[in-house]
Each structure stands twice: as C-alpha cells, then as structure tokens.
Length: 52
Image (cartoon, rainbow, N blue to C red; front, top):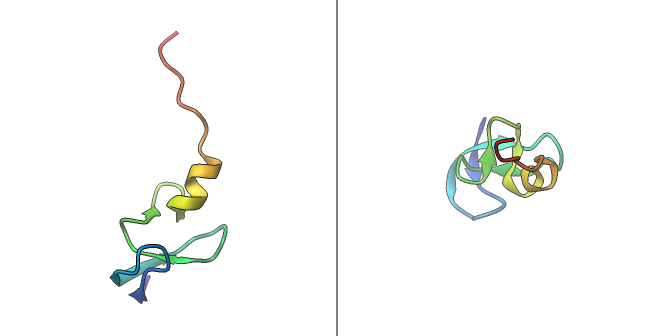
C-alpha cells in the first residue's frame, strides 16, 4: 500500500494498486477480495446465481 490520491474518486489516503490496470485506488474504490479496482472488478465478476 502507498499513500496518495485515489485515481478514481480523488480522496487522499492509503492506496492499493489494481492488478489489472495498475491504478492506485482507496479502500472505497478497491475490491480487496479480487485484488483490483472496482471498475475492473465489475468487468471480471461472475454473475451471482439464485438458488436452484
């Protein structure tokens, strides 16, 4: 993690680096479970299926 300005929302704080696009994103704009920013996470998440 680094400290700086989030490239997605512009907030200052601790940032993580997206494994896909390399953007530095704050905790609100980063999906820790997938290791990527929320913009990339939306592209790569599989649809959630209901009960069978």
